[in-house]
Image (cartoon, rainbow over all chains, first blue to last red; front, side, top):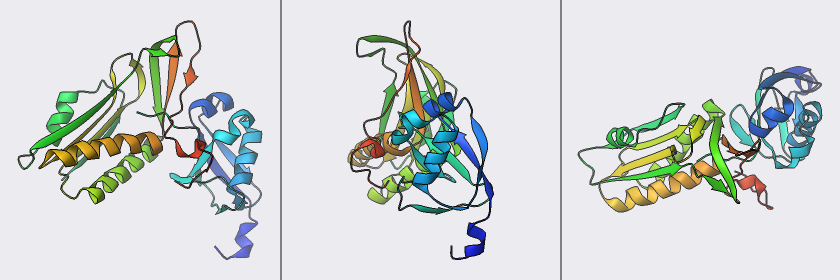
Length: 95
Length: 152
């Protein structure tokens, strides 16, 4: 995305918690306000972890953004929109 | 040529899933049935509870079907069923079935399907132990736990 004006806009995203993260947060889902729609995945995970008691498992989590996995990195620049669905994905254990 | 995908709280019926993938053109149906184990590191497991990020889990299961069909163009039908909620010990938590004209494709495809499911379908299980709260499991196939942190 190239439009600089929209990147500073405040937005609300939807956060979904699963497994251990759901137990630690004490919530299935939450609405979360961001100062800017442009944020790295590492910063986003940091903010969410601080707000929802996930510090203890932060290094084992990845995120899914609108149902696609997203690597956690300071180089992973996200451009989010109002209402985007961010899922907290602890290590998988299906099967 | 169909992909049958389901997340369900009901008991999995292996015979019914077998029938779903049956086709006249096929000489092979390969089935994998994953069942819940009663022990972990000397602790007795009394039950297991599964949860999923359901819409994304179905999407990843669809993507696995695409990957299988790309690897083996002679696959006819695929079924991937995963149970959710409380699963008593020794019952099936996952059933994967693939039909194909000849056995090698079906056997190899089912093996890849379960590996991929463990790696990338967003499903979690919590083991509940006797006299203990229980713990969330982690698949060793889960990629971002490896040191390299490879992109999925």
